[in-house]
Image (cartoon, rainbow, N blue to C red):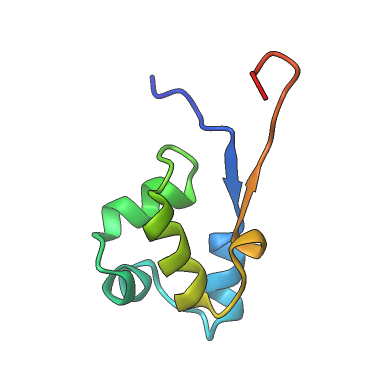
Length: 77
């Protein structure tokens, strides 16, 4: 089983707000595979910093609008 990441995202919501952009279209715009976009969107994979910025740019929003880092008490700060 894959451990979920502490990074959450709003990619699905933002894709639909961007003229219902498909996962395939987002993948094409940022140069990743659709499978990678799915994994990022579902929180099974944390994107590289570059990929995160590309996703935000493709969706026309800031990085903070797309991704959030949820720190728990058990994790180092």
